[in-house]
Image (cartoon, rainbow, N blue to C red; front, side, top):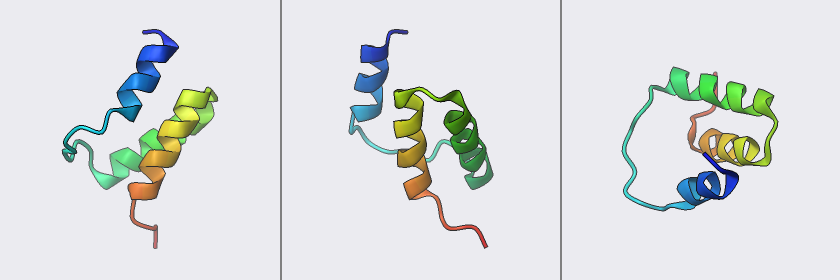
Length: 55
């Protein structure tokens, strides 16, 4: 999948559906941050903003 298509997918503001548990989302954020691309960084930020704070 090329980079332009990835950007298009994360910018699509379609209907939101719960797809992950909170624990799965936290794990995804960590994995994306390790990946290091601009797209992964942006997606990690977007996901992290929606997560409740950890206790």
